[in-house]
Length: 409
Ligand code: ADP
Ligand code: ASP
Ligand code: MG
Figure 1 (tube, rainbow, N blue to C red):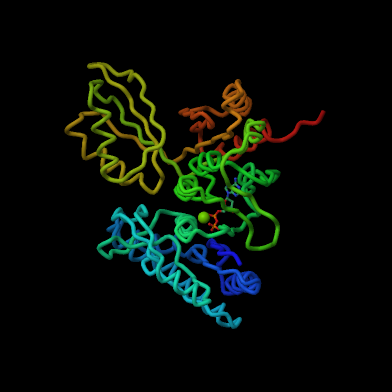
Figure 2: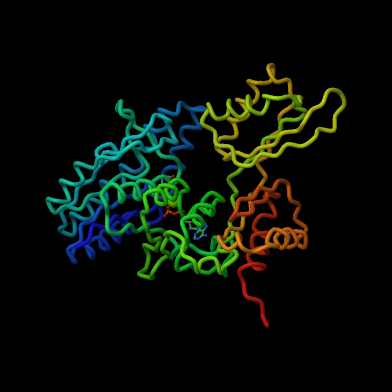
């Protein structure tokens, strides 16, 4: 008998037919005698619609009220999933994030998990029930409802698997596993049998939304091995785990395109100590994550100045420009420009540590496609470039072909 945590994403619970399919799969495991905790997302499109409703009312709604609103999406799915199991004669109970003991900090819409005490879940499992938990949500120690950032049901599942010391953690989605690139962009992408935490982390950070970044960080930290697999078939998926030596044989494991980034440029920022610290502290105080940063000499007249560009997630753009505008009197930069038409293209692989010439090959491939590189950032196992969004998919396919498709002899 195993304790299994299974997470089903939005498309896997998109309608009542799919929810019945989920129940049938859970029933299959249950009949083997396994104990099952099911984490579900909101039905696909529901979270986006709730966000749209809020933005129709005001562009920057209260983040506390956003969480109150968004948490309803997952609550619909847990109860329907419990009912679908009841219909099959299986005893199941749904729990909100708070009832599942998920305690977070108070950073609304991006809360971090502080601890999990799944007392109710333990008791229900012991009593032979299937436990259905609402993904993506938690509660502060003071009892405020919070959410864990987009895609946060992955984090709920992995954190629960760690807290419950589950034997298995399965992330069910609408693809067979983690591919060498998003199969929607690169149709010939290949499914990977396994991938190292660090590679999955970099791919998730580079926009491969198949796993939420923070969930992979959590899995690595607590050593939760998990499998990404399809809820539509029984194909084996991709195992995400600690790196093993043979993984270094592959230079590039995957390619990713992030279309969800935006660039902010401050033109002619006075070139003096403390200015960058002031800007990035103000962004950090507003809980805005900054990804790439580039500083260049500004070609204006007058005092020494630099142009400072950085990228943020698109949904944070409005908030970020507001923060920057609030600093205008203090910092006296000339103007702020924002650009949403960018894409971040990345290649990832632990093998990059021991191979040279990878960046040169990537840049050469982009040059052949006539794609201009706006910003570059690297880590030991990743190279990312900011390019024009309109050329993003074409560039992704070209880079995938250069590194991951075997050439005819
Ligand atoms: P869920 O709703 O199940 O959480 P998501 O939509 O968040 O599913 O993630 C699954 C999607 O991730 C796939 O449909 C696919 O388009 C996308 N994706 C991006 N990069 C990859 C990749 N490297 N491998 C597999 N899927 C990827
Ligand atoms: N429903 C949330 C979202 O759409 C969380 C998730 O699906 O994991 O981001
Ligand atoms: Mg997801």
